[in-house]
Length: 140
Image 1 (cartoon, one colour):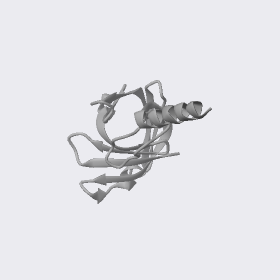
Image 2: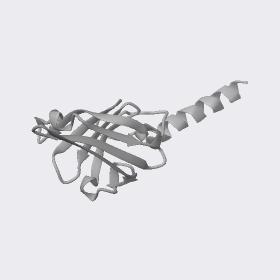
Image 3: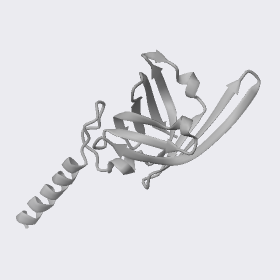
């Protein structure tokens, strides 16, 4: 009986260590896979461009991702009294040993690759590669 408990404990510990993260902001360990943590409906909680708060520029963005790699980006842009709603479908994939995430949309202007800073089931922080834009997303 003691051997079974030790075996089960070792298996659980191994599973947790195998799904651990090494992102700058964590988490240190997760029971969910990285794909499962990406799957969500996301909104921008905070946006920083070169340290400056630009969250208001992203108030109307919604990102929907699933664990199979599908993505949909919805955005609403306001220019004076005119509002333009945009939606584009695409895919997401991990890159650089799952340290980065790439979004490839039908609207190529929305295509971006981001370094993953934090990846939790309800929180994802991304830094655009080649830029100083940091997006802190939260689940909707």
